[in-house]
Length: 215
Image (cartoon, rainbow, N blue to C red; front, top):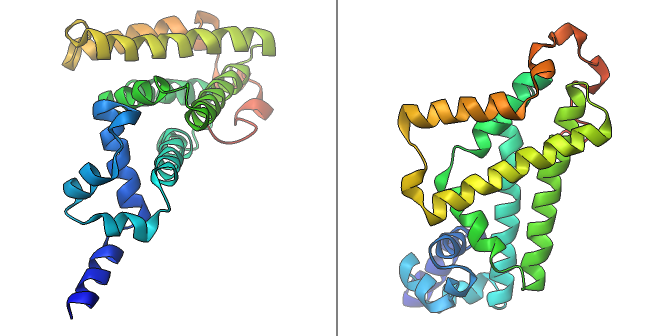
């Protein structure tokens, strides 16, 4: 019976449970904080549960980064939804990008470990997909590819700057209604006046949905 209970304990936690615990550890202490024994204690299991699912720590880190990539790309896009109007869609993207303090902190913690080849691979892919999605949003607003890429870089640089402020000097980042006012200012600044004033019927209909349909 004891052996069966032990097996049940190992199987009660999933790969996703361990991956989320690893992400929580990264958010709090960076990549170095992902260690098997402390995670097992936090999850209330023995190391045997870890080895039931993973061959080694590297496999756990990869599973955690895969979960993070899905969350920061496909899942973000799912929350934005299939908004047909490109102006409203990009507004939703900006609101989503600036909504989560914890997700921003995790992004910076992961990016800080870019000297790790596997981490670098994931960070680069997430950043490229985010930036490319923004380019397609600006193209859908009616801008040529070169100008759309300039505006996308500007928007993404602003997003990254907000993450840095939240991490390094959180007291300088407003909350509540002041943050809503700040967000409105960002949206007004990051979406050119001519795009904001352009009616939906005037925007290129073929470009109303990003080509790849994802972040």
